[in-house]
Image 1: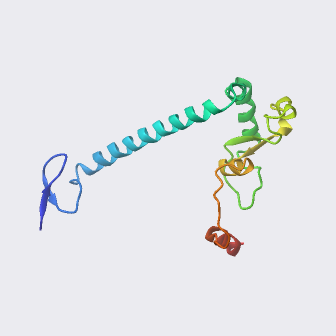
Image 2: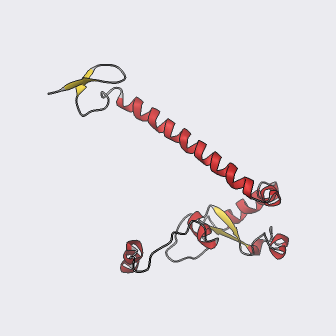
Image 3: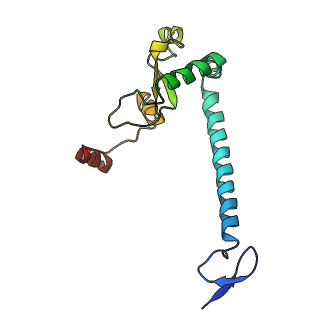
Length: 152
């Protein structure tokens, strides 16, 4: 059997293992922490770039106490169930969608109107705004759609 030193404690371990049994959980925890820090940096950088492109009027609204209270209350009232009713969605509602967009004059007037709000999951909210859509070539089969149709 070929042995090599553990990178942390220098005990001899079989080749093929990265760390000894004592060091493996510590190294995994450190790697998970580093990955979380990296993801947080990416998220902050994305938000900073995204928010620079948005109108400050809307940023101020979404950060307002009134919006936070209204949106949380709407989610609670819906039992955190997605109300978008897009095909196959049974996810947890975590966002509130404005049915009439607040970027329009009418939507701005209705921004806190209860009937203009729709609790939905992130995927349905992105679909409502046509965000993050992937381009599909003609003739390419979507296996997820086929499996969903078979399961019905």
